[in-house]
Length: 287
Image 1 (cartoon, rainbow, N blue to C red):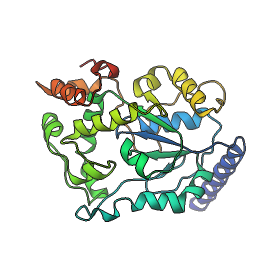
Image 2: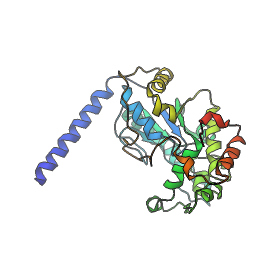
Image 3: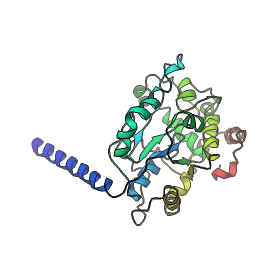
Image 4: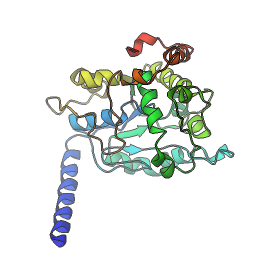
């Protein structure tokens, strides 16, 4: 049985490789980025694009890459010496770019707008953003996982007992500089606001809302089709939010974050983001 299982596994892998090769012959697509603040539906969007457009889909290059996307990754220090903070970006640009884009059209990143414009190679950008209360709740649980720090030992512990504490505590060096050029924010909410405001002000990017992709995928995919100038594969293929080959969502429910907010938390989040000239109603925050 063990030998048979091994044979079947190899056969399935060969079928997958052949399927990828056939799919990748169907259309020549220029590479593009899928960018977001963490916990905003990045892989939901990547999976939706890969399922609905005849683009190159293979196993990607770069730390954190997977089947269906390349990944530029983040900076893990040493934080006392910032001279090497761009080495992973330069390595991708100079060494991995050509090989990577022959495997996948999608390049994943969480870079903020200033860092992207300064260090990344030029290509179209699709930016997905989400209700900030839901992002904060998802991020709170994600950064409270023991396994996160086991997998990323260089990251200073950001675990918090209470959601309100998480919102207000100073960010560690990893959160300050991993995807940000200036790192001028004081807390996780300001980090989200600086990230989101930068990208929403870029008229050359295609900015889509997580809530719209979940509730009306046909309209969002139509918008992306026009932006990339790439036709759809056919009728809309609906992707389950939990159908991810990488980081899974905690729940992915719209409005779920409100139940974690205590007295003053929503007001604090709103105050932070409005300092960055973001309008509260833009994000359909029901909390």
